[in-house]
Structure formats: structure tokens, C-alpha cells
Image (cartoon, rainbow, N blue to C red; front, side):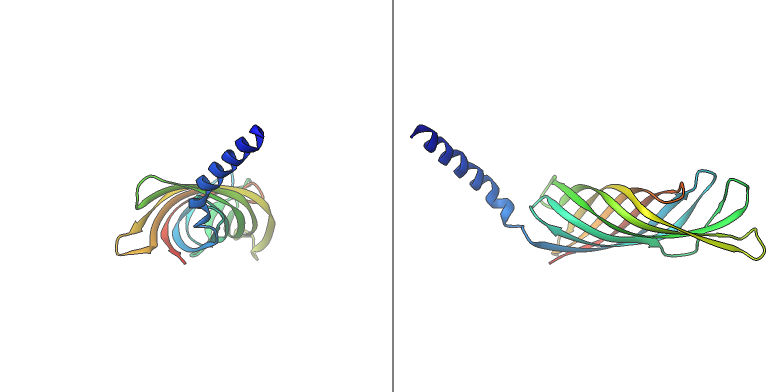
Length: 185
């Protein structure tokens, strides 16, 4: 009889502790970011303008499933390969992962996210005449950290800033710094 009473008290305590988390279950957020990315192939690097579009589905108040797109928005990155040839590179990345958030005030939150992304990387050797193109694709990890603040006049709109590191195909990696907005539904 004592073990049933202890089990009931423990389950009751756990359920009451989780009830605030259950209130946010099913929340949807959409994001759009723009920023600069340092694209590096191990021999040289260049900065390009990139954009990110994302969707988050919150399974608790602090944990979400993230889906997103990240890619070069402007001109291609101008790099050199191992032979010194001039190459121009761009990429598109489609990601899935998890987001973990920690509010540190009523209007500000820090977050970390990570997962895997399918990436298509396009290289064009512009030193060759005529130029030659190569496409590399694969699944690679990414990790990100950032902060966001809630707008005082509209709690459903948030401004964010983050830094993201992503391994890409064919020995490339990218480090992005971006700013953007999130819309909570």
C-alpha cells in the first residue's frame, strides 16, 4: 500500500511539473534570416551573402524540431583550389534537427540547435577554358547558437541573431553570422 501512495505522489508531482510545458506543445514558428557566410575549402575562403528559411515545431516549451533551408543568396564565393585554379562556389542546404532554448528574461531567449543537412555544393572552375562545373552532394552536420528578443508591441514577432557552423561536401565548411525574424503562430 505504501508503494502505491509513493507512486501516486511521484506521478502527481511529475504531471504538475510538466503541465506548463504541455501548454506550448504544438506551437509553430517560422523564421527568415540573412547574413554573411565565410565559405572555406581548405585552400582559401571568401564571404558570401546567404539566407535561411526555417520552421520550428515545439514539442515542449524549450525543445523544438527544426526544418530549414540555407543557401547562397548573392554572387558565388571566389576561391582557389589545391592547384591554384580560380573556382566559384555556391551551395544549397536542407536541414533537420533539434532546437533547445533557455529563456533568461521575460523577453529574451538564448538557444542552441543542431542536426544534419543535405547539401548540394556547386563548383565552377573558371580558370579552365571553357569553364567546368562539378556538383557534390551529401548529408553533413551543423551546429548553431544564438539569441532572440521578443518585440514589445507584438509578442508573436521576435528578432534573432545567431552563428552557425556547417560541414559541407568536398572538404568545404561554412561559418555564418545572421540576423532575422521569427513569427510565432
